[in-house]
Image (tube, rainbow, N blue to C red; front, side, top):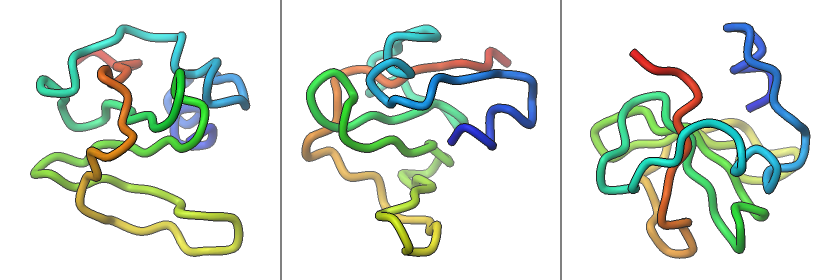
Length: 86
């Protein structure tokens, strides 16, 4: 996540809970490609990037490969975060 956004000039804090408090919160029902999806209390447990068409990009765990997967709604915060407006 950090490297993805650094590539377009956006510096994010390392802790996902802090990332959740930056950017503009958007209701998850209105997410667009590039929005960041958070899981757990205050976005503290997992972070993914929404790719569109119900798909997300995630690194599921340390040592596992980054993958494209269907968006999971279980545990998702009520808002996604939009760092890039287009």
